[in-house]
Length: 276
Image (cartoon, rainbow, N blue to C red):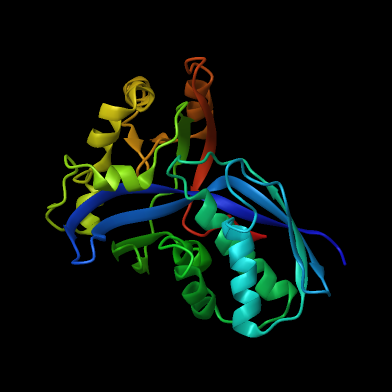
């Protein structure tokens, strides 16, 4: 069987507010997700023996705990599928960067194997499986820029400007759980609308906490902010800014400090996964 290649794109949180907290401790959010045309890549070949074999392991993550493996097994179990897959991960997105790499990998696995195995599930059914793997996975399965609320599971598609983004990758990894547990995190934001976002009345409340604990994030925000309003995505560590053209973004990237990695990518209202 032939090998096929599948995009697992990064996402950016254009803002992130916390409006409250549920009795179970989960935070209630408002955020907007937009995809970019850069991310991980999965190469997949279907097998007929039911085995799931993953190459390209992530340091510190056992293959059995990897969201790719878990997604494949969940699809097998849900559909009683007897097929398997050889999956090779080309990992381009950093861990702990706020770009959604693990969730995107899981979503791409579900979408790709649903097609290759001919299991016939709808996008909604795949998203239901994805939600058992992580709150962000359904966003990637649906593949549309989205306004999200609740714990991230309530979302609706939105049409946004699609600028060129410069994304910087500070030399640190941020643990989402630790940021959400921090006593200084703002948890009582007044709910806003998409109009507020587009007029600039939105921010990332996690940013103030992260910069206190991670100087490289603070430095990246300060440096990038010289050229365009800079924001942190998710709980970090990556920061981004929008530009009108690829040339502008690449010119700034070329001037970045030596301790910063980064990339330029186009904002996408439709995930590159569905442009294959």
